[in-house]
Amino acid sequence: MFHPDLIRHPDSCPTLVLNADYTPLSYYPLSIWPWQTAVKAVFLDRVDIVAHYEREVRSPNHSIRLPSVIALKQYVRPSQFPAFTRFNLFLRDRFACQYCGTHERDLTFDHVVPRAQGGRTTWENVVTACSPCNLKKGGRTPKQAAMPLHVEPIRPTSWHLQEHGRSFPPNYLHETWHDWLYWDVELEA
Image (cartoon, rainbow, N blue to C red; front, side, top):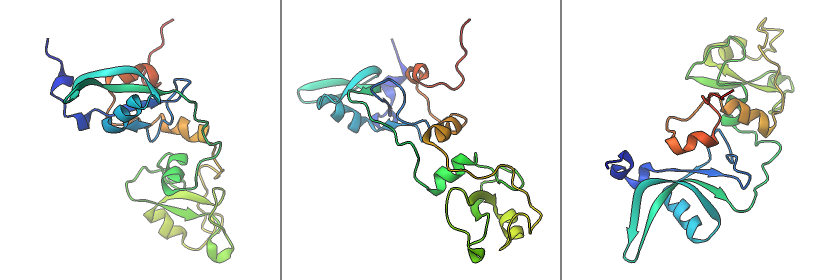
């Protein structure tokens, strides 16, 4: 019987990586590995295969179906607080301007208390802003510019960012991944 996985190029067969407790290592970005890394981890006995593609890869004396979901054998403790990066800041603020609420592609970040007024580059003083709002606010505080924030900036936990990440599912979800991810899953009574 024909299966769409059989005509897939191996490079289009990413592997969902679960922690030893069978939860994804991260939701956004989704914890996926290229097929080569997954196969290497299988041969090094560092992971268990949970599900696989129908697609096989072969060597002169071996054949293996590509893993679509793997679980680490040793638990990796997630960091309690994520790194302060542009991407994590945008994710904390749900990719929306914290002044006008728009979801523009041309997002930047803004210091709530400007650096010229002693503001620091910290989770509690930086927010996502669209370019027009950032220009309008200039070197003033939100109060001085009469531009209140939608949400006060906080230092997020990794759990906080994971919850926000669930709102932005990736473009590709193989059917074997659905049991391990929680978006768009209807629970039965």
